[in-house]
Image 1 (tube, helix red, strand yellow):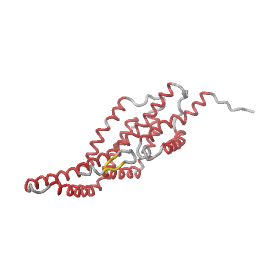
Image 2 (cartoon, helix red, strand yellow):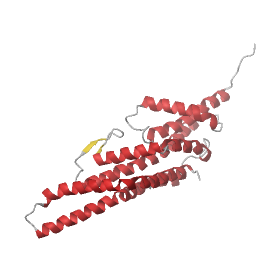
Image 3 (cartoon, helix red, strand yellow):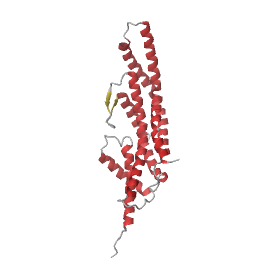
Image 4 (cartoon, helix red, strand yellow):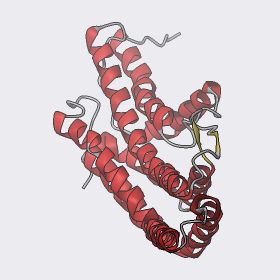
Length: 261
């Protein structure tokens, strides 16, 4: 009777075929929006990572045979985890653009005190930020952004193979520069509301000069709030084109980070 004999190298390669891809996938699910939120338990993320690994592993090139208890294995784990976290972090910054735009509008309209706890991050944010975030999240899912990100994850194994060098210093610098893009993009979204509220404040300033006995703060706060919400409602049709442009830029940043043309 013939016995099946596996060498240590074959066993390590079989385990690594699923283990190494799972580390990059786990890093992505840890940092990406929606799945990486605090409302999603760690058990659910692990199950999703295992299920995704079982689907993607047969499509990936064969992994290197590396001893699981070695310095090379620890280095590979850190490199794969950073790649996955970097991809998810870019999409996280993309959704934080809308959170920041809501904070800008809330401060100008006087709604900075109307805050609520964000269940995805556990941080207290304004209600307008929650409105913009929920709208952007629903649009992200409706455009199959999560599927596009998983496809980029598969392509990343071609641009950044397991035996490669990982992320370079230039790519880490590009990640740090996303802060500038986040603030500028958030300002573009709320620029119409900013302009309208500035005109309203200038009008109340002129009224205060002509009628000093009038309490500008008593009259100006509700008027600024009403006109601000009205301008937000009128600017909602332009939200979809802006979202499309920003999502394309976010996915372009992901492709640049992982080296996909």
